[in-house]
Image (cartoon, rainbow, N blue to C red; front, side, top):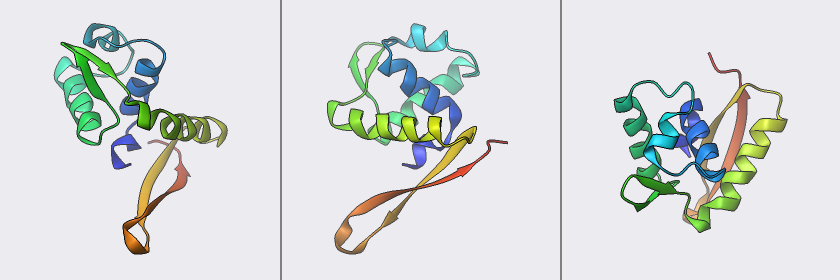
Length: 106
């Protein structure tokens, strides 16, 4: 869940969920920085399995991640915080649960 701790990554995921799937469409979103920074964020999200490629230069949220991602986005939207810090705490037996601590983004 650490990959979701950056506001640009959350914005990219929201963009993909709302139909912006190509690199060009995602680059048109405000605040992502340079093209190199965009690719860095996309690779971080892919590495954490929040995104996968669906063709050349196109991205999608894996079906198994959609509900979890929507819950996280809804929580952050209703929490009153500008952005949330998200961390995972490992529980016994290898299971994990999400713990949300809201903090304003600097």
